Image 1 (spheres, helix red, strand yellow):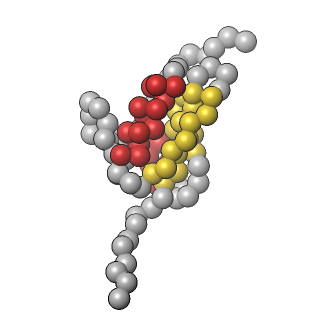
Image 2 (image 1 turned 120 degrees about the vertical axis):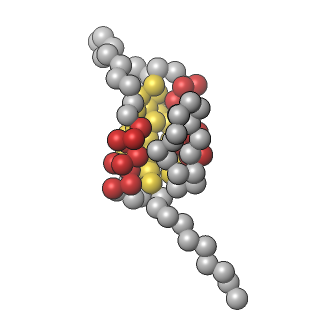
Image 3 (image 1 turned 135 degrees about the horizontal axis):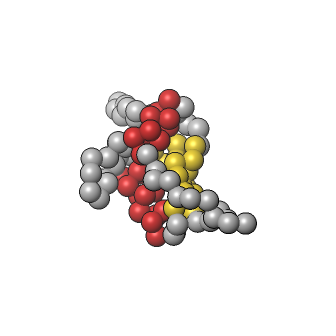
Length: 88
């Protein structure tokens, strides 16, 4: 089987899809190497993207990676806004 053409991941669109379905694991994109998938997953979790503003807010997403036939897929889920309650 031949490898399909790579499409660049649209992270703004992915963040929008994730926020629309809190708590649901959704695919973000597929990366050629584990290293590049790990960089993307870390950027989603931390909200720090290397060269441009991040569409993700730090601490509001969980990520996981999974090997595929052609690379490594990054999945994420939106945790929603966390509120801190003080205990008496």
